[in-house]
Every structure is written in structure tokens, then in C-alpha cells.
Image (cartoon, rainbow, N blue to C red; front, top):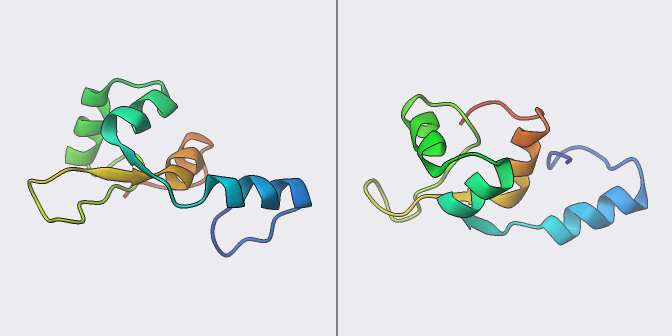
Length: 81
């Protein structure tokens, strides 16, 4: 997938990016997308690895991932959080 500042190569890529949007994923959903166990994502967060995560309500609350960032991570195009 494309990063925000990259120009898509085709209209199809542009369409895919707009469909992907900014959907929030739970840890369980992100793990399923990456085909990993939720414990793996938890460990990655502790180790400051894996796709970027967000805790909009502060520490100790629910963790979310942006779908397009999880996809970019899976494709090897984005570094750790």
C-alpha cells in the first residue's frame, strides 16, 4: 500500500487506498490480518516493534491499529512504531 505522501501508480491503486481508508482495527483484527497471534502483537508493542498502534484514551486502555498501516507493515514498507 501507499504511504500518505506517495502518488499511486494507477487509478486502481488510488481506488484501493481510498477503500482502505482510516479504519481502526482491534488487536484481534490486526493479528488476523497479519496472520499472527494477538500475543505476538502484544509482545511487539512491548518491544517497540510491529505496526504503529494507538491508545486514544491513554495508557492502560484499548489499543487500536490503522488498517492501512498494518497492511503497509505486512508489505514491509513501514518500520516499527
